[in-house]
Every structure is written in structure tokens, then in C-alpha cells.
Image (cartoon, rainbow, N blue to C red; front, top):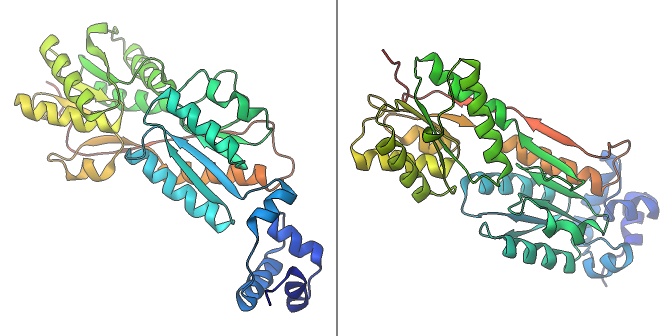
Length: 335
């Protein structure tokens, strides 16, 4: 005969209210949680998730909607979040929208029908229209990497303005004046923030912003190849370039190699993320490194706090994290 919650209560000496609270994601003391989990294992107790979901309106699932599953930044964050969510009894349903607004909305609609308990989203549609219906459910939404005007929810992102400002400032300190930018699409929040940091660094050092030195890519490897080729051809006096995305960093390195442009002797380069690639390059790349482990941890913790009834939580939680710079050998001092 299958074990019941009463059997667990008898085995642990705990009340049914405590056992029920554990299964419904409530706050249970650590020593009691250990007792319950030991009893579950000993009794081979199996939770009827369907029945519990109908009773509590909770499915113990969290939807995750990201632009590109094969993107290193996304993959590292998803892996870290899943580990934390799983340790708290939640499963993640991951949807890859392939940087397509229509697919993104379809993914959110699908997750809404699946009655997920919350959604984590690295948004493509910066109007936030894809989240409107889910927001009406009152369930938590946590945005990663990007903020959306008009969407009332929590957010975990890095200080992209400061990250870009530090990277470009480092090039200026090495006496570079003609510094190119390979940025992202205008409509993407992070792209605008990194371009703002680029401009702030130049203005802080009395260098005029030259639009010819700015190229908007599409966050792909091929986009990085095309952008660096365009910048080099149109700006023969350019001595350095800041690439504000990891795929485009890879593309820029490929593009320079294909053109026979020596790095850093002819062009100094600072890239963004993908530490393994940066270290594998010759010369090793200097890059801005985002704290993906911390982003994953903070995101998972915020949604768990919302789902498990954390007390005294602010209306909105905004976590703005700092980046590091990995120093390679892709920068050469001018003059």
C-alpha cells in the first residue's frame, strides 16, 4: 500500500500541518525538512503532483524564456538557475525563442496555459507586450539582463554602463583616441546601456564621439565579422575596438584574422564575455566578464522568495551587479 502524509507524520513525529507546508513550498525549519526528506526516502513516498496542483494552484514549475539556447551567456545562467530551483523542488521549463518576438509571445502563452508558478525572461520584445497576459495572473516575473519600461517586476542585470565605460577608459589610458564600437541592436536595452558607457568614457577624456566609429551588429558571430570589416575599411586611422557582445567578439577576431590585421599590433581589442574563448585566443583577449553564476543565483533566489512567501519583500527587487575585466594581451599601448 502506498505511503501517505499520515505515515510521514508518524515516522517524523511532526504534525500534518508541517508536512503539508513542506510539500506546498512553505517555510519549514531545516531540522524538520531533513526529517521529512529522510521519511520520504524510507517510505518511498510519491507526491501526486497533479492532485496537489489542482488543490493549491501550484505546479512547482518555473518557465524560462531566453533568446538563444546555444548562447554561452544564456546557457551558463540556465544551468545555474536549474540547479537551485531543483534543490527547492521546482522544475524549469525552458523555451528558446530564437530572438524572435512572435516565438517569445507564443512561449509565454504556452507557459501560461501550463500554469507555471512564475516566469524568468531575458526579453526580446522590449515593449513587454508578450508578458501582459501572464502579469494579470499575479504570479512573479523576473527579468534577466534587460529592463522593460512599463512592466512591474523584479530584475537582475549587470551595470552595463559602468562595464563599457571601464573597458573603453582602459583603451584611452593606453593612448588610443580612435576607438571603434561594435554594439548591439538599438532596440535592445543592454546594447543601449553599453553604447552609453562607450560615449561616457570618450567624453570623460575629452574625445569627440565619431558616428563613423560606431557599428550596430546583431549579436551573431557573422555580425561581428561584418562589423569589424566595415569599421576597418571605413576608418583606416582606427587603432582599437570595443566589442560589446561575446558572439560578435568571436566574429571580430575571425574578421581581423581573415583581413590579415594583426592584433594588437595594428588593432587593439576589448571583447565581452566567453572567458574560455578569450583564454584560448592567441593573443589571449582582454574581455569584460559578467558574473553568470551570481546572475543565476540571484534570479533563482528572487523567484523562490516570491513563490515561497518571503516576508517584507519590496514591491520590486532590482539587483544590479558589477563586472570584472579579464586582462589578456589584446591591447597595445599607442605611441
